[in-house]
Image 1 (tube, helix red, strand yellow):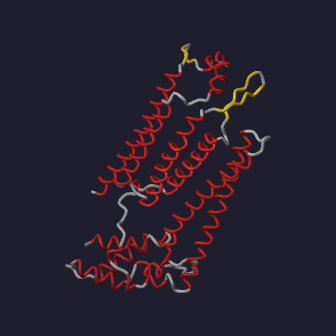
Image 2: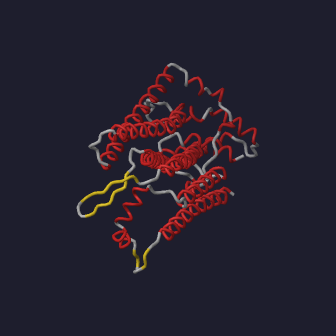
Image 3: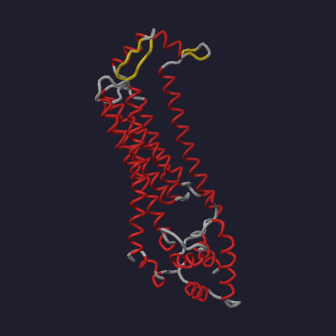
Length: 344
């Protein structure tokens, strides 16, 4: 029964400025218990809470300065929409901007690799920030117009509010998944995927070796490997994006989120291990370039006087991929179990 009161108070106070929450929480709890009898049951508690009204309306009354662009009645919905619209619009615009910038620059025969990459990144960031800002502005304008005309206000009537709508009180902030982490991870996945696809599709197809002040440029990956690499990276990106979206939706470590992280990492691990063990990774041009500079490269690949072979490099890289993937899975399991223990 006390849980209903805690949930109601939390629903009211988390809509208020942080500096006012403790004071309002104490005052509101005192008022609620004062309205209850000594042996109040669950039905009596529900009656009192309905008498107080919806949490959004009560939060609006507690506002010290009720001057706002977006009222507390619709503020949560406004923030919820922004958390989806701004990152997704910004990310899509970032990808589009990077692709357009890379294609435009790569079409210039005089452009070098560094110029193509810098132009692609700068155009992507510019378009991404512009689109995200416009999404923020137009979403805000839409909510203001809807609220002023009564479209959103009708949804916040006390008659439509139900006890079942009360959110659960967060038991431990450490179990939360920071929104900034999920968005950053989403952006990194998109940027890496775009760069990898541009590299393998022919827009950024080069590897180079500097010898005696001259730069020798050639194609890095073979055509057969590129044909497999692009869809493989797309699948890894798809699982990664789904994982980020689920984290943004749930914002907390749950068994479903944990399962998503494990599946995403295991799929990525399997695909990466398959790719690095293929015999046709590098192009004939790059292989010939390496062979021509074999003595210099072998000197670079010596540790403690022992030459590092291709097989050893693959084993080291494979072990690194496996360790990182299993570590990510283990971290997700640990955080999910810890969240469950805290709730108990």
